[in-house]
Every structure is written in C-alpha cells, then in structure tokens.
Amino acid sequence: MPRKLLLPYKSVFSHSRVPRGLHDSLAMNASRSGYRVFSANSTAACTELAKKITERLGAELGKAVVYQETNGETRVEIKESVRGQDVFIIQTIPRDVNTAVMELLIMAYALKTSCAKNIIGVIPYFPYSKQSKMRKRGSIVCKLLASMLARAGLTHIITMDLHQKEIQGFFSFPVDNLRASPFLLQYIQEEIPDYRNAVIVAKSPDAAKRAQSYAERLRLGLAVIHGEAQCTEQDMDDGRHSPPTVKNTTLHTGLELPLMMAKEKPPITVVGDVGGRIAIIVDDIIDDVESFVAAADILKERGAYKIFIMATHGLLSADAPRLIEESSIDEVVVTNTVPHEVQKLQCPKIKTVDISLILSEAIRRIHNGESMAYLFRNITVDD
Image (tube, rainbow, N blue to C red; front, side):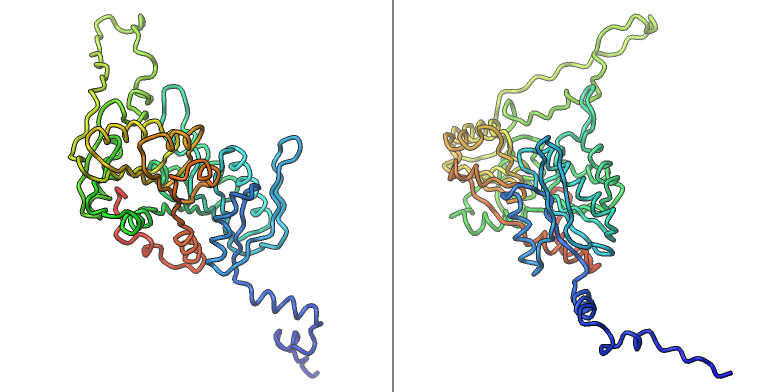
C-alpha cells in the first residue's frame, strides 16, 4: 500500500493558500517587537513620562482604559492582546497615592490574567518608601506594598533612587534601582555658572554620604548641617523604644535595666566653609520644604550667596511652591519621576531634569536580555 505523503507545515500555509486577512494578521504578528508599554494612570498629566519613554523606544503606548467609576472604584480595560509578551507598566505617582497604587495593582492583575509573559513595573518614585522602618506600634507599609505587587503579577520592577536601598530586600523578584545622580550632576556642570566655586551641602548627617558622593565627583568641598534643622526621621521613632519605658511590676525584683539617656538636639551649626560660595543641597526627596527653607536660611547667614536644591523626587506637597518662592532658595532642581507641572506654574524657581532616557534604555535592555551593568557605570552604594 503506498505511503501517504505528509506535506511540511510551512507548505500547508504557503503564501498562495492563506486568505488575505489571515496573511495580513501573520505579517503584523511577525513585525511586532514582542513587548508592550502601558501607562497605568488615569490622569493626563501623569502620562507625559510614559509618552516620552515610548517616543525614545520608537514604540506606541499600549491601548488601555483606566478610570474611576462614580462610586470611586478603579476600572482597567486592556484593549489589545498581550499574550506571551513582555509588558511594561509605567506608573508615576501623583498626589492621590492610593488611587495610583490601585491602578497599578489592577492593571498588573489584568495583564496576568491576559497571559502576558512578563509584567515589569516601571515605578520611578516608589510610594510608601518612607514607611520602610518599624515605628513604635506601626507597620512596615513598604513591605506590604511589595507583597501586594508580587501577588498581583509583577515579575520585575524598575525604580529610581529608593529612599532606603534596603527596600530591595522586601521583594521576591528582581528590582533595578536606577540613579538620577548622573543627570543632576550634568545639570550642575552645564546650568550653574561658576559651579567650581560651589560647595555640596547635606542638610542633615543622614544625607552626608549622598552629599559626599556628589562632592567627590565634582571635585568640590563638603558641608554638613547639624542640629535642629536635621531630618525628622529620628532613631527615637523606631520600634526599639516600644513598648514605653515604664516600670513593670511583673519583672524580677532584682532586675534593674540601665535607663537610656534622652537625646538632646545641639544648637544648629554648619560643619564646613560656605562663606562666599554657592551652596548646593542634595537629597533624594523634597516634599515638605520647611527643613530645606531652614537650611537655606542658615547657609545665607554663614555667607553663601546662592542656594540650589537638587533632588530626584519633587513631591512638593501642600504649600511647598509658595514657601520656596518666598524663601532665600534660588532654584530647586528635580527630575520628572513625579508630575509637578502645577507646582512649576506656582513657582518659577522649580526646574525639571528629564530622566526618560535611562528608563527607556532599561526597558530595552530588559526586553532584549542585555546586561544592566552599563546603566550602573561608576555608581557606588552611596549614590
């Protein structure tokens, strides 16, 4: 009996036998790059960074609808197929932090149930990063958020300048913590006249390592403000002093624990010479600006003739624009990790540095399976 000839799979779907509509679909699939970029934010101002990133990638922003219903619930609808693809969700955090978090979680879960291969969150400013330590009877909310993102379906996160680098240990998947310092250093060199006559200032001892890194790269002097204007995140607020130090009658009568002496703030002082120089205060977040305004006043008293503030994340909450405008601060430079166009209209002293270049390059390298080491050249732990 003659053996039946089996045609190869390729010949069965030859060009001449495929219907025109199916052939167009196959051609479209072949031309696809294998990844999609979505914006998880319902606010138009918050999609600007996503648009800049997709323009640099030469891609289109993914088709999705994110909105709040009349009862306040968040709804996300994915309008195209993501099956088997790498999907990047760009989420910038506006003032309504909790809504942005829910948008990110719901979109990640929607993509997970739509069979996306990998779901990578691009979160330039990671919310709740200041709540990364145990404070009395509180909770480590940042750890909770990391667990929620993992359960929602995220497999990787790209972020920038975490408030505490130890936050990376909260996640059960890879985290790329990019740095904005190269862009801010470039701004100092190109936009601040006579920056060689500047001194890098840490507004508290906690920020001294970051300031030292800037000073060493720019070959400038270093100054540290110590005293009443220091950061509000103090050791006395952590869980080591909980429960309250009161006498417990259940203790053994012969047990006497040594009493810890209370901390006392020294008078405010500036360690380092700022007289006749430009003072550049560096930090990772500028939110409530009272401490920055107080630092600028003391630097003016010590003889600094110009005050610049450089920070990665410009949250600029509450009356920050008005306080900056009325203060002795000459300029506040932040990146566009957080939208702040409204604040810029209220205060012309606020300037923006675009960091979409490094985010788009990170997306490209992760999708292509390339090393991320290039993005961390000459980056140290203190940066």
